[in-house]
Length: 281
Image (cartoon, rainbow, N blue to C red; front, side, top):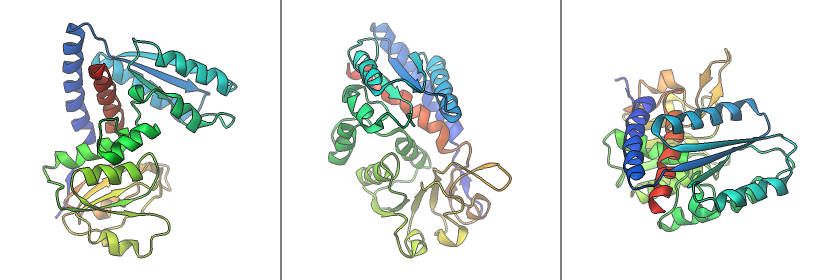
């Protein structure tokens, strides 16, 4: 049995069409959703990510502002700029691209963003809202993973989900989102013993550790849903995830590819969060 592919690119296109329709409806009410993207320094990967985010805004009718600063920008100057964006009624969402230069405290900068405009879902208030099940912004990558899982038609209620990874941006919020969907959740990490014993029991596995071949075919329950968040390079320099895709697809029921799986969904959920920020006013 070969797994069915969960096409993140196709799902992303579908959701972006919905975003564009909702943006049009908002504009008819005199509201133009606006996203400010702040880039400090010249990290090549960050430049690509930022360009893709701005392009996605243009494609869906979301107003966007891209602010680029030299790597020597002071922390105080960046904090002042964030405060100005917090006060700007034309801006509904603020995204400060990470990583920041070493002399800037990223946590302090993220915490300076108004929770009402934290469309990345990284603020402590957003994390607290997720934990308590109250309205807030869900972190974009795990939010995208939830949408990918739901696109299979599988009901998460009562299912056993294993999350490999415990980062603040993916692993921890992923586990909380799965709990909100009534899954039974196990979180595994670098200190977990007998990882295979856990993953073999899983109806859903989310691999998010940034290490190639973390999940191999002998670790997967037949028919399981496998979501690969990893972004790595193999020995030939080709992009790959945390999952041994070619082998695991022969065991799993559903699987995301890398690229074309989780990646497109992250930016799409950023658009969804920005739209919701505008709708909330």
